[in-house]
Length: 295
Length: 166
Image 1 (cartoon, rainbow over the protein chains, first blue to last red):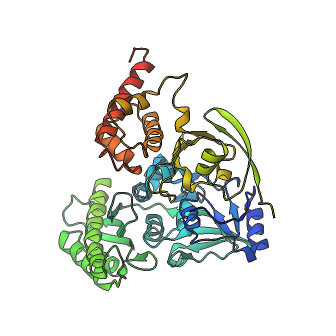
Image 2 (cartoon, rainbow over the protein chains, first blue to last red):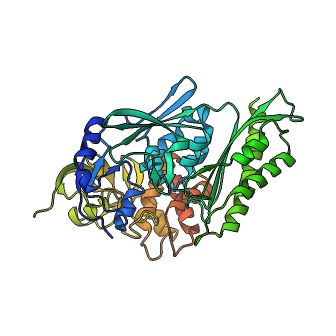
Image 3 (cartoon, chains in turn green, purple):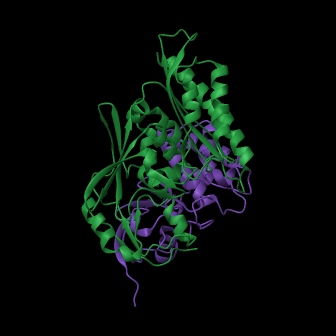
């Protein structure tokens, strides 16, 4: 199908864009980034915004830069640019690994980082990455800008803490010093994940691979709840524990047991819990192995 | 009430165009109906099948989930632009020779995606081609002949670039 009619503007500044969202509030306006989620929804007429504010002409919303221990990605940065960026690969290899799993290359050529985060699909990769890294999301609104921690950003399926007149402008990702892994199960390559896992592990000691201890782990899951969630039970089980197979298995079991995913056409609750257990274990193992290689 | 329209300027297959479009006009419909270029096909209309693939500033996109207004100022390449001076592009020749199509519905998208693949990597392995064309659905060929066609075309394009007769 085709989108229903809507009014459209492509302003040049964030201030103008916010102004348009405020001015046309009664039309239930939406922000257009790459459109790779929004336009299909409009084609299906599941979304019928009366007004689209296209960010394509807004200067300064696209780009990747390093600010000390923080990697900053502009909201309008295309996923393909992130995927190929050597700077991202060094500062946030978890992002590089995850973004390559988002749909297919032609979608990543248009789709943006900010668009994926603001769309907040509960099975999407980048929201889980933002949550695992404790990213800060920067939003601009009528009163200026504010910083929303990832832990407070995702409020439900396709719902975020962004107000109707706020625009996500950039994501700030702390540089993680340890190992990383992004693993997921999907029915078909490049489909949305049934379950996805972002795993970050930092090891203690100068380790020869034996007797390492885990200093700190950060784990996030997608596809098991209305929003991406941290696997806090597993994080606690790993902190200070030996980085061995038994510890990792027990942590993955603890996390999976604490989940209560919904079932749907793609997988039952039991299947999702089982996938979460398996992919958490694999993710943690890979992150530990990479943490060892980093040293 | 007359529909609200926008003026867009873009280049399609090297030809500049200025056009009035409704904001809701999908790029694929703009190409097919407004510019009379029906080579780009419409399949799923939600970004899954890839038959509407065109190049926007050299990068493959799904024209069924792109608005025409989003292409304002861009350079678009469609399947109609592949053949030059009555000569088929090597990709078209090899799709024909290797039977890289049967019904032909996916072919415009496959060709444009293949063109991007070879622009990024002029000498891909069969595995790399298979992974890259996973973005586009074909229900006839089983992909094997398409992969062979892309590999053959790549060799010809490398040879002609080096000044050797393909």
